Length: 367
Image (cartoon, rainbow, N blue to C red; front, side, top):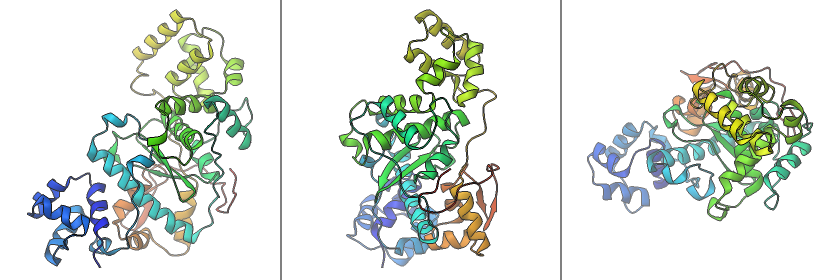
């Protein structure tokens, strides 16, 4: 039978309003609303036009209902500035990522969630606790953040390139933590995004964002800074009032953005106000406010790489996985875009060469 919620999910995934879809299929906006609410069933001809306009297989609209990921479950940044279309498309992507994860979970034993919830801890204390729990030495830089999250049971997926104006976000579902990354950013900013979303998962737990403190974004930033650049590590490697050149050399140790390290050094109290402003101005002139010149390569996924390679050994193609989800191969590809490979015409084509995989797909796996 036709599943109304599937229509709403497909429409939102395309970032399309009900009015826009109605115009394209030559129906009223009220009719589309009725289809999505289950008050009216579209005719076969109308449903065919809907499937064509939304570029989803017709079978997608007959799948069982799925509970959508909602706005009050995720950690959108600059929430008030985010337009409804990109927001809804990102949430729909998260729902499809959850369905892909269910399919993967049914075939592989993935690491169990090992993310503590520390709502009553200060961000820096929480970061120190998680680093210790995950076996990262105090003076050592954090390893590949995507690998680290995956090794501790976080499911990592990506936003499609057309949603580049949406930042990374995270959520819990069924006791499993999810992080959805914007893979168009520099490698350094991608690492910070991953740590920032880990901060949300740790500090704000399973609560919906409507119950989070107003300064939750600031707390997640503080957690990320402390997780990637521990206080003692920074003090041991960076002099007081560092020059811009010293900041640029030091940032390579932690693989972070130059501005992120500058903010951290200032927060720790190692800058005078004058030198802090001077450093920010000089970094801006060098282009570090809009990018990361000569930056690191984006970090990629171990789990997704091993999953798709494992499926290929079982003679299960990406096209078959897409068919099981009743989505196109392109939509499947977008869920892993920039993390491991692109799915094209039923085959796997590497878009970013993954690091050598070392993670076993078993519960409790470690990096």
